[in-house]
Length: 81
Image (cartoon, rainbow, N blue to C red; front, side, top):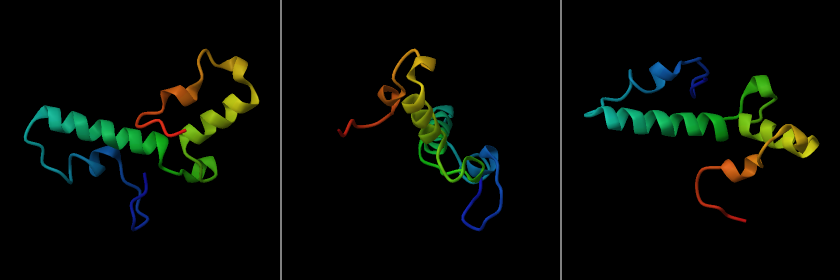
């Protein structure tokens, strides 16, 4: 992952080394939020500035027979259609 200064950081550096967690539950919640952001929102240079979720949706549009279920139904959050 790349931070705002352009340096590459790991998930450990983005969470545990920056924040103090009172409980294990807080750590797990923050890790889940970070992973959701990374998989659904973060635009990656190696994917031509698309998110992993965008690539999955693009593949689903091209060949839906490769999927058991519609990946758009797995998006976390409010459904805004």
